[in-house]
Length: 398
Image (cartoon, rainbow, N blue to C red; front, side, top):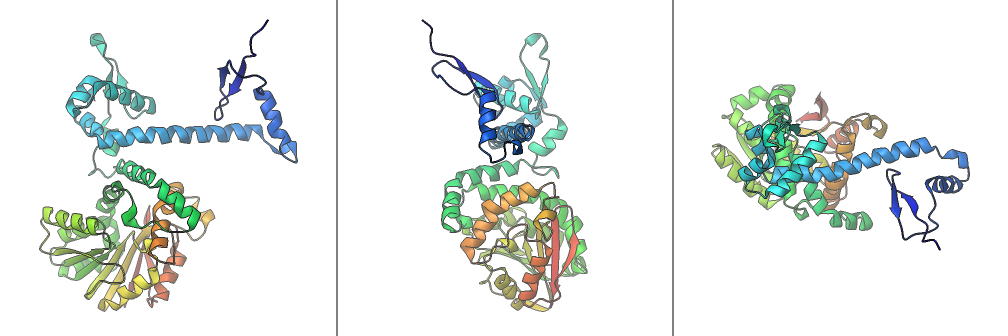
């Protein structure tokens, strides 16, 4: 008498076989391929090589998704910063520095070694594994002031995962997801992630690209930042141009509170003020009004620009910094970071703009739609003032 047939079941992603002693009559790998072939009207239409290649691509993406959790934990728990300070460490040394449990830290380090984020060094006679964070890796993972810093993006990703139920509801109903409804890690993550871009580009690229703006700021003008968030670019401008005064408005009260505290900490509280107000409801008159990565998030961008135009003094200008985009999807897909831009737009920008109104430009609207938006708001002089590696700068004057 024989026992049940032991059949090898293919892994759904990699095609790897596993033994299942309790199952019978499970199709073999060859039989499953034949079944796939017969599910189409034309059996020859399925290219099994393409299936295998695409399964490998998705498997790699899944691996990165799992690893992103550990990358975020390293940021949240201070592991990257501590390892950068130590240079190299055993798991026991790193755990002691961070006040964490050694067994978890060792497994975390094994993950990072498998990913190539840290390097494994011979522990010598002591026998303990020694892990090294190269200085070049530390610039990306451990120092928010570095121009190569990226790790804050994982904090944004963690916030998006926490909001996934709201996003699923929005996709099913067509409702929006307002900014304030997201997990709080989104606000700090965006501040850190975009802060790297602002510190690298605002004063060195963007301001010089707008004809005459640098001189006007040096002489002293009144500037409004609409959708200011935590106020990073507003504060950078105030530090660089002490003769000008700055106001930032945002509808998110907690962001305004944090921006106010940051301005005080930077020593520019005497010439920077942050207020809770929407893109259509602030008061005052200004010489320049700026939108940093914000215009495409508004549900009524034409109305936002109309209000900006009505709030400008004679000779004033409106400036918008937007993510780099072309005018067609096919062109945008040639951008190496198209996946990042479209992902962020589908999780954050589009849901927010739907919650805010009717129009949803998305983060990849492109120059033609953006310029049409300016012109519809009564700003016919709108033009693309500069194109950088990751941004479009648009300007209009009255």
